[in-house]
Amino acid sequence: MLKNKLSKLLLTTAAILCVNNAVFAAETYRLDPMHTAVVWKINHFGFSNPSGKFMNIDGVLTLDEKNPAASKLSVTIPIADVNSGIAKLDENIKGKEFLDAEKFPTATFVSDKIDLGENNTAVVHGILTLHGIAKPLDLQVKLNKLGKNFFQKQTAGFTATATLKRSDFGVNAYLPGLSDQVDLEIESEANLVEETTPGIKK
Image (tube, rainbow, N blue to C red; front, top):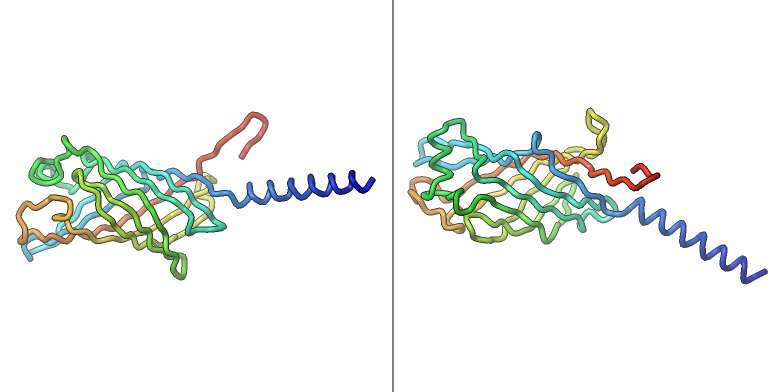
């Protein structure tokens, strides 16, 4: 009798732990390309600060709500989808003098560490690979909102900023008149990937 009670207790405890782990397990979100963009800004010989953006960005966020510092981010940016609003400038940026999209069609960012801050902020450390060169890059990130979007999809919305030196990535054209520093601002929404199993709806 005692043995049976102990067995039932152990099974019940195991079931509870499994449920808790399922509740708090990290979940996979995919970046929404319609609501994700990397905006860049660069100083042009002291006269102005032209800007543009990269679009059609793909990426996966593994969000661990119980332990946010354990979350992961991986992003791929198609260089050919740069948009400054000026076709000739876009061709220059994609050309061999700058990012050489034919030889290096994508840039990637993969996180390797997250330092949590206050008020839903964090520093996301990772490696940016651009123009065939991989260098560390830190993103200053703010979680804007986590919840259901208009279509009732679980969504995470972020704003992030970063600064890089283009010379670190071998992009040296017109230095120093065209500034080495490039400022980035990222706006992104990521939707929960709903995994389904026969008979189970997530």
